[in-house]
Length: 181
Image 1 (cartoon, rainbow, N blue to C red):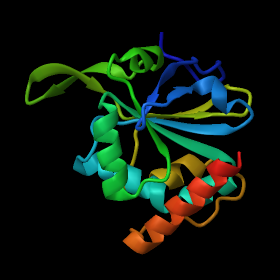
Image 2 (image 1 turned 90 degrees about the vertical axis):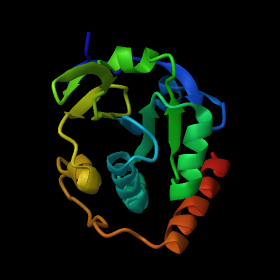
Image 3 (image 1 turned 60 degrees about the horizontal axis):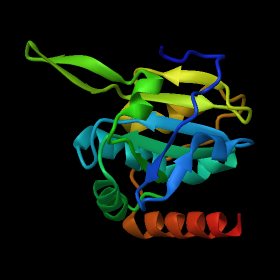
Image 4 (image 1 turned 90 degrees about the horizontal axis):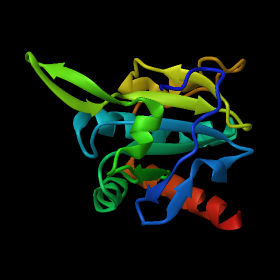
């Protein structure tokens, strides 16, 4: 059954890009952007990840942790993170267990051919673990603005890509904050 707004976000355990176990319950007390995307290093998925990267500080100032989920393995996630300087975790859901809990493994159709794949959907989860919003029509180039739309004071987001130097600085700051926790 697909979760809905106002329900408890289904807990899960999976691994991040480094093989470290990650549970949604580990983030209790923090807001989470849980975004599902089809495949590492494809054009739409890269645009979405880079938009989140470019606005990562804005999201963190609003109290959000960002978790990306796809069925790619840890090695693929590491390459994607390194190539695009992503400051957040990517979760490997190779057995599709997380996708199935969130109803994001769906039948798709292209050129009349039906196949199973990942629905590009984002779940916003509050500090208590309740789903506060589901974004089903993701604008990959402006995803952060979609996430922050319901906020009473929407901060300015970066719509233009940042330089590699700036992205690396954001990653370093993120790592420092994680090490303090």
